[in-house]
Length: 120
Image (cartoon, rainbow, N blue to C red; front, side):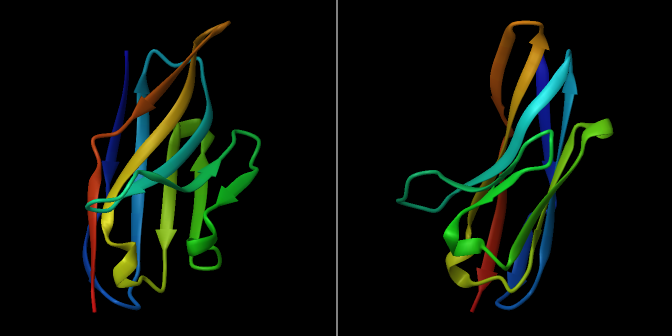
């Protein structure tokens, strides 16, 4: 069993910053991709940023230049540094991890979500 525990959400004014953290724990052989998704009210969940174990990253166009994803592979933890926040960044942010449990078995896991609210 694998758990993802998120932290760091909250309320911030436009232009401010927040840092999200997500730690994976449990019966983990290795963690392939780790990333962040978000879902605003009435909208579909969308990818914000993801990072591979090897260090490659991918960002949504809407956050490029403002958000930075990073990983600590030794701790199976992913971070999302969010700067220059805008009201349209308001959403529930979900951590996602693609985990190798044993050789040949890979599963997809989600965190419980953390609310990010940006006031104008």
